[in-house]
Image (tube, rainbow, N blue to C red):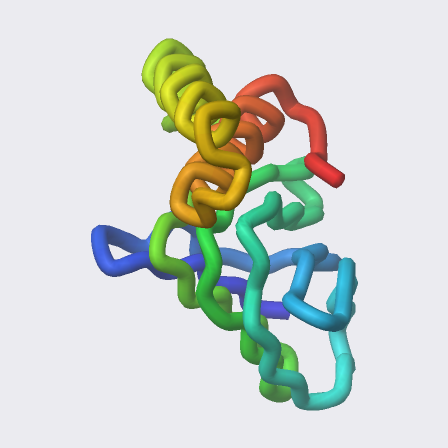
Length: 131
């Protein structure tokens, strides 16, 4: 099936895949294979995994939408980063800053979101699919 991961800055991935796995709001983790029924879902801040004959690729996804139509999966995301494009020191610094802000105010939703984004980046950079 044809897969595209698109963010406002660029197309992060475009190619053929055997499966795609993402995490959706309210629906949890879902995997798409050729012939999947049409689907539209809202994405969580999480990792997306694309499995192709060329190997597995993991991407950090920061919200957005996933659409399946025919044998095409399109992921439209605010941010989409390939494992090798993640700046680990920057993600670690962002995590530390967000953790400090969240510790100071556990009700700070922005800090919680920033902490989640930083952790997803670090997990993807290390090759781990975040929970």
